[in-house]
Image (cartoon, rainbow, N blue to C red; front, side, top):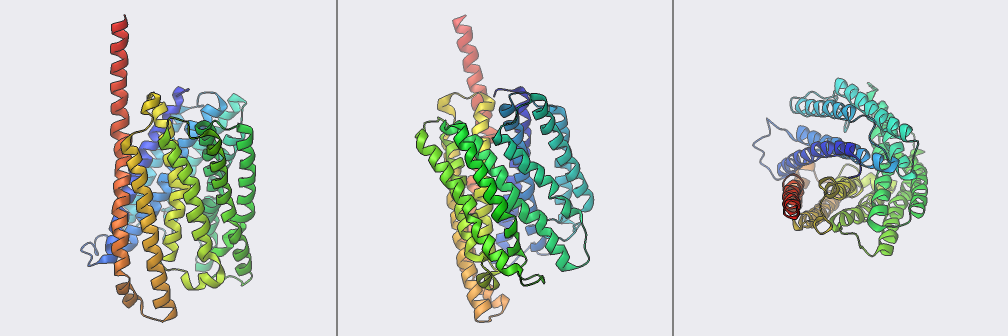
Length: 455
């Protein structure tokens, strides 16, 4: 760790990973409800469990992004963070707002707008936090008078994330208008500017893990950002197919959504070409696994599986079925969860000053493979359930509840894969909270003893 103020990132990652664990709890609760009977039906109905599961995902990933920025920007700008105190204050407000929102969801305090259910006071707190966060980064870069392309893309993605949250503050009585503008935030985040954040973090990690030339790596960033703006922004139209808007959105959404996989394919090629040159020589193999995995899984989940059901003639059958979470789970995990875990896996050994041979642990690698295997299994279970549901419900016209009974075997598979995934998450948390600091204490004690003996 080159700069003391990079310690701020650790605090953000602590909050992010605790929320990651909470998300897993509610994820298992959600899938258990598909198996029934549900003893918690009157205490934790499915809508509230799913609401917490999805919203906590957005919050913890954003928290991880902010931690990544607080680690990356000082190093790229070669200066200390402008105000660590401001960063901690923002984290305190952010955590308070997040806890308030989760508790509110459990008691029915919600705005009811899917994925943007946060009560209005919480939304105001989120805006304040983002302003504090961007001011801190901006002043750091301004004081250093140094802005690399890598951090520029990252900070631009974060700034646009804040700007694109503003439509979430609008309230409409008309349901079609409400859905229309909701995607200005949700889609333009996850299939737009968050891809810039992923690309910035990916470039940073590839430069350090592969030793690849910065100029070559940053040229790729321009390509990725260009594809994001061409395909991702206009590709938002695939959310407008069936909400009551004019029919011209169908060809627009179909065409530009078909281009979206190019962004993630570009990232996968980008990562492969960088690592092919280096020969995986960096001692932190765990960070390499998460970094390359992010590029590949996002190409599969966000790219190929997204394309599989966003074409209008297909989507009219699959819309609202289990095909959607098939795409959503692998896409979000690959593009955003894995890149956050990658930057954490890279930075924590630096944070604790681990030696090269201790940059990874067997527990960390087990965590990686269990999460990969569990997510792949969940994706396949969702796919099988979605195909079954589409055929029985949409083609044959079978009733919803009768269809659900036929899908029980797929939910059993989903639960089993989910348990594997949760074990992987638990191992990552154990590695982060227990093993990494324990090794750091042993290493410090060993160094102190060696210094004493030499004296």
